[in-house]
Amino acid sequence: MYLTSGAEATVKLEDDIIIKERVPKRYRLSELDEKIRKERTRAEARLISEARRLGIPTPVIRDIDNYTIKMQYIDGPPLKHVINDKLSEQLGELVGKLHMGGIIHGDLTTSNLLFYNERIYMIDFGLAFMNSGIEARGVDIHVLFQTFISSHHDHESLTEAFCKGYRHAFSEADEVLERVKEIEKRGRYA
Image (cartoon, rainbow, N blue to C red; front, side, top):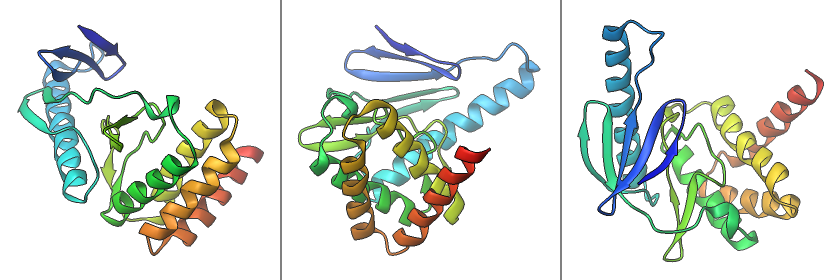
């Protein structure tokens, strides 16, 4: 059963296993395309596993094969359907741990977070990368805050709760959150 099909990959569910397969890009030379898809698949699996080692709930990787990652199915709703201030604070702590470990999610939205067994799971590390810079961390959070604004009527309290959790988990939080404000101003006046 196909769950989603995007520009980079298809995601389907088979026998309680998620199968994410990177799709070929016809505009690239086939040798280059194969190399890129293999590298991105391995990188995504590595970052999911690294996030898990940092204490972030993620799907367990079952197998990796060229352009395909097979992983645990998390049977919970997207966070966007259940988020409240308490969960937003928990999310802040998780993102703080992730950033402390030098991982940038790259697509931090309430659709790429699942709520299952009273835990928030991070999924879709397809755009994730390693970076310990303030700018990259700020952009990661800016994307999340834009999701709060566009999808949640109580975005101000969600943002405040997130910041509380982020500060609790990450010693450089204030510097990153200041950068988020700068990034927001850049976008507003661009």
